[in-house]
Image (cartoon, rainbow, N blue to C red; front, side, top):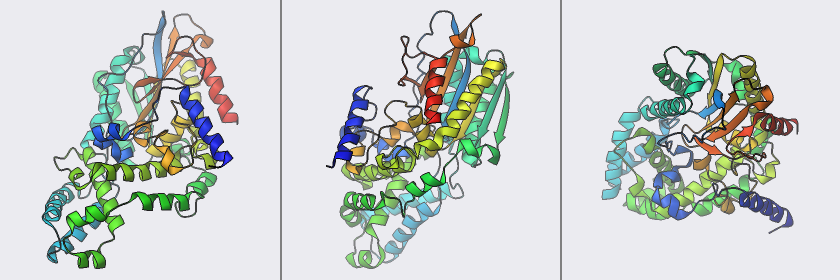
Amino acid sequence: MNSRFSKIMLTASLSLACLPVFGQTTRDEMFATIEKTGGVYYAYPAPKATQNTPAPKGYTPFFINHYSRHGSRYLISHKDYLRVKDLLVRADKAGALTEKGRDVLSRLTVVCQEVDGTEGDLTPLGRREHRGIAERIYKAYPEVFAKGDSISARSTIVPRCAMSMVAYGDRLKELNPSLTIYYEMSEKYMDYLNYHTDESNRFTDGNNGPWVEEYRKFKEEHTRPDRLVASIFSSDEFVRKEVNPGEFMWGMYWIASNMQNLESKVSFYDVFEKEELFDLWQCANYQFYVGNANHAAGNGIVVANAKNLLRNILESADAALADPKLCAVLRFGHDGNVIPLAAIMRIKNFNVAVSEPEELYKYWCNFQVVPMAGNIQMVYYNKKGGKAEDVLVKILHNEQEVEIPVKTDMFPYYKWSDVKAFYQDILEK
């Protein structure tokens, strides 16, 4: 282990020592909830209620700053299903499927009929996820919405994000019809809702990024398809001529992982052994980390993609302080936006810097940062007759109160002036 990596791991260990162990996970934890091996396909683990520690005496909430990933969706392309199904159909015609293989083909045929024409769309579960988040937030902070004031709601130009925005807003309107919600889906907001620099794109490039060769070897080592392929195909000759074992295993992994978002009675987890799912998840977890978080070799350039978004959040808080009618700013985007935002905001250990793929899962897990509908919300409080410097804020990640490295003697509440200064310092670096 070289000295540079030793320093990186020491930094990671020290940061984790100061925080609750949110980043670490174990095989046993994932095997107990096998859906977690789907990573960013993990359906939103909705709490029964939004965590809400009583505010200091005299304080009431008046504004919410929000950013959320879209809710549960179908796979991005119908081809993701058809590539696997068509291979199984060819094998079936050739008499090259085992009994297990024929059963998988039967199930996959049903699924393909269900998902036809839904490429990347929000699922019914995805709509309910956002309706549920909106309802819990409304009930936890009724004072924010009590006056029926205005809400700004904006999404990226991707339909599933806009549909998530509408599902969230519609539930608020049902709870308080006097609310005025301004919905917008426009390219002009993409420079902060979904921003990526050319520099970060060069680093995250899956063909030429500096991490690619190490990842290729890691993925090859952790993709062990022989047992699975033998359980599905009965003909070695067919496998030799027609099947790319690794591609088949990964195709089945993505389908199996995403079934939880369809709420279908069909499952494909029986195709895998748990250790196989854990290994595949480690590969996907590392890929998402490199692409969106604080890989040690990236020197913060990927996390910096969230600077425009963080700046907009600070500006929105200023706008709410100046305009008492503005009660919430809602934003809807993607996993690749929530991940760097959580890192730049220094939530939990999500800014941890690691480089070696085999170490990552001990410190950072994609399903913890951003499951489907993963969200970050900032709730602001003032007191009657108070001044701007008296405003308090607390931060929620997936509706749970979280710490950031800003001094406070009233956690989960922080002085907004301290938090704002902390984030402005990050933006100026």
